[in-house]
Image: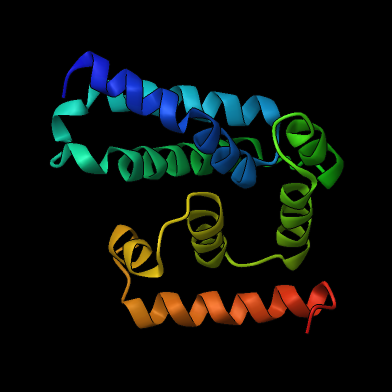
Length: 157
């Protein structure tokens, strides 16, 4: 992969990477650090990318891992107001509501990741199963169970 192609991929997914990291660490500074660390790691290990077309998914996985490492190290969490402030100028109010519900649902880590990949990135459940290495039926079960939980919390069902 060329430098230009890598730069294009970063520009294309930078906001999504940041939002993905923020959903894990719930702190704007830590999210920015996670993205920066992930991009540095990706650049250094670019030769490990087997399929250039999957760079977006690869960057998501690296960012997610970096955010989890930062969360383990810092162990501090922001409340939903900080999340809302971080997204206020970059997203519409439905995104803020989504993150509010997602935070209140207190989903397990794997289910949380499925929601981020599905709603934020627009990956299909099949693609998520491939990315996470889980069976498609397992991903579907987690997704639909969590969807019902979130809908019940928000009074939608």
